Image (cartoon, rainbow, N blue to C red; front, side, top):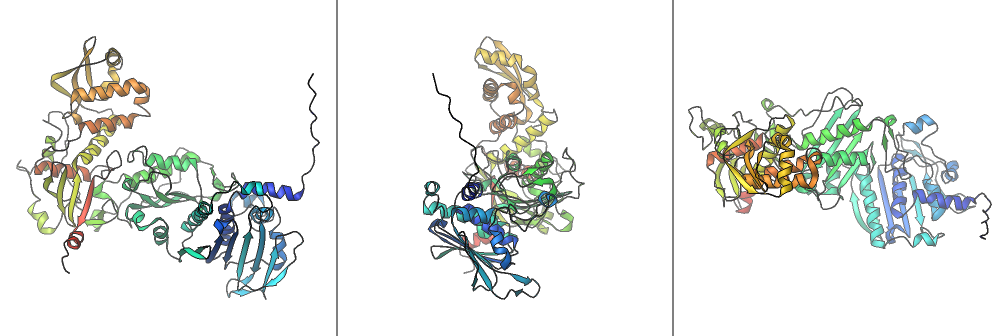
Length: 628
């Protein structure tokens, strides 16, 4: 017979053990200590913060600031659990406006490391008057106050992390790895506070020196000038919500999610809702294995967001999560989807005077780009402006029933009033220097690239990638409006098929018709393609049908028309796009350029590759050493 286990008696834990357990919520490595100390320094109104680390922050973390400091009589209280100057009531907690507020950071650090706090209080921020002198307090039990030398502000020094809990110290990584985490923690905070100067030194060597600057310079200093060059600036507002920052174009996508910085009221967060909104905004522009890069700042009424749902305050909860998701999604998607002919310059804003968002997401910000008549300029994908913008006014009828081929239909868009082909720019436009953003075609290179001249120099276009994006956007629009036109084939294309495919073609005939296909069984193992989407009439009908049936067999009709709809349309567009080595006339090339200028997201194909690049006259002059 088994003995009944005896339940241990319940007892109160010693205060020291309670502090060490509680420290685990806040202090899991040196970087988390540094984060808490930096947030305290910023809340104190510091304009200059200096950080010194030794052995990755395990041996020493010293944070010096020029903030308001702490009064002598409050130094001991600052190291006590649940003591804070940042909240005093439940109302304060519901409208937190500071970075730190839990009141446990210093006490938690003191529980697992040797902590020394030195401070000299500023008596009046106006004339910078300070207390008579500074005071120092050690974190050991029974330590007493002693005078210290300090000009102003505070110095918090942590030594020997986990000296009294060696089991936890075993879980720390190498010195190099811990320092990298500390540097990343500083970068996250510094991005949101360009008005503050930061200096980071490791083992006596300065590794990062950030001077006070504006937001753009701070982003460039931390994320790099190449990030800025490949980004568009975002400014959007709808009621109480505002989002600003920089969204990198798909060409700057990464293999890892290591260049994604998202802030809520100045606080760096890893929020699943915001991450999903941003991922969806980039969905049509990136290959599945790539990650977008961005640095975005969301401003929201503090009363509508709960920042006290995670010990390290890296997660938040929104009162109206759907409205926030839709606002961020539409703002970023609208920025990235701007057609070339109306793209904003790097300094342009994405703004709205829409009413406040409701739970249903109404009143979402809409793009209001600078007016062409006001002398604005269109911008290239890398943020550089074109010359004066001249929106194309012609009729674009690519792929409509009755044309002789997808790329041949481009000719219609470049016909002069008398019906002749406009192979070169109009004389009036050339004389006035009024050229479209992508200019006019000069030639085709190896049947792959279109060479075009605009007011800034030479434009090189990947014709297959560009045509693929145009077809994809048209297919999406047609399917949304239930208007995917079908082009009947003069001679049906018959091909061999599996029995299951023949059955699927009969069972889902209505769905196939919605996609623009007309398939008919010709026998137990044969299908005939009698019609294809008019936009894809130049593609191989049998190959298109096989690809569609393969997707249908693998994912089912429900998934294919919902979750995987865009993947299907992207595959269809790839089949229908003009192929490499296909020779186009100058008129056809010009028509393709005009369509690119009016198509959303036309500067990248469906897989995230750029569709064109600009070589300015300055670039060419530099290459050929002109003027030297």
